[in-house]
Image (tube, rainbow, N blue to C red; front, side):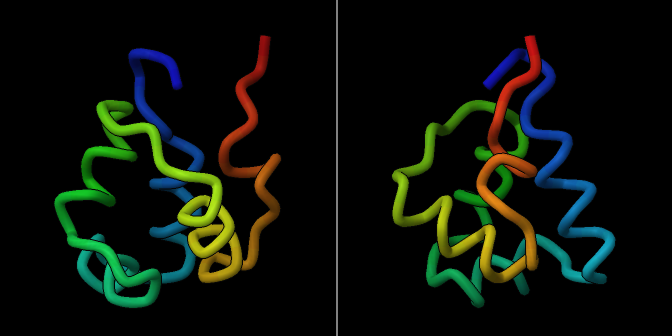
Amino acid sequence: MDKQGNMKLRLARIEKNLNQQELADLVEVTRQTIGLIEKGSYNPTLNLCIKIAKALDRTLDELFWEED
């Protein structure tokens, strides 16, 4: 992830009307983990990426693929 963090994840979460805690509860991690992923300070496992994508009705590419 780039220095801007994962803005696509943050926007997808907001579009689903979820706060960080609600998304964290859905994917069984802490709110802090979601915050760190959004900031780009934490590189989630593939399993966590899949859980997040399913919870937000997005594909892995839509959330985590970095544009060149």
